[in-house]
Image (cartoon, rainbow, N blue to C red; front, top):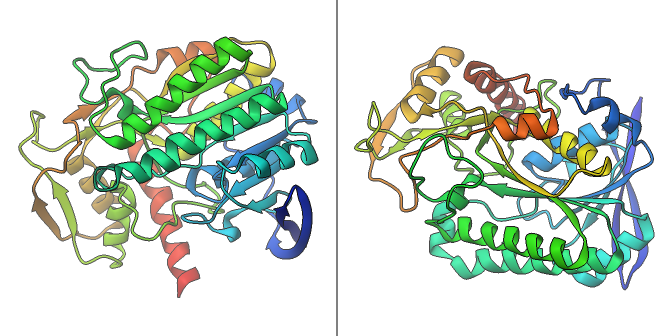
Length: 373
């Protein structure tokens, strides 16, 4: 049976238009299994605003929130997101997270209890070419959103941050209290928002959770959503596109790093496990937990060549690889110390395996290709 969601717009704080769009009902499945699960599921009367909920990670988040019985409002300007990625049952509002009047109106209209803030520009090289654009979209808009949230009295705020705030760490694995010295405007733009949240928490009592993502990859195990952005730069996304013939070659940026094979090393986390951490964070805050900043990774790194070999093995094809110069802002290695997120939130990842991450990404890319074709 088909289900529907409302595609809504707000003008001057009033809902003025609704159009039904048909989707197939999702299966009764949630990839999240963690210690906070019962507490998260029990809070069925919560209404959550998800900024960027039509994007890659945000759409996964919306699926899980709906499965847990939450009311979900998605705010997305659809610059890189897709209306079809928003699952049935959620209300999609097309607009910017930095539009204070609109945010204030929808918080009041939907009686929002919590914010999960994904909306951002995220490509490191692009941030070097357009730093002011990144500071506007990531920092200025976040500042406006935080102010609207504080004025409206929303209690909980979960922020999508990044390991890029660490820059080039002096030690591995990197811990949450290690120095934050971003080497890109992207990392700086996210760090500024972290600082604003810290100060807003101290001044106004806003309870927040900052989750610093390492390298997010993979796709929903049921194939309902995944990374769909055209021209995405994520390594695993690009590699599986190359494996399917959607790109002619795969570029390896730098082979002279101080790593065992000369290529960059990253800590890859499955998107479903990352979403589980958000669920656990929401349950933690609702239960009175103090504001915190936590790494989200597995604590194990893989090089670019490791990833390419895994994609070749899973896809059963060879890839045409081209060696290219280093990209500005890329640290040689960054791997998470992830004991704090486990102990604080009771987070228990289920997909901590590079081959599984690649297999899910490949399955989604095949489905996406059929959709486009």
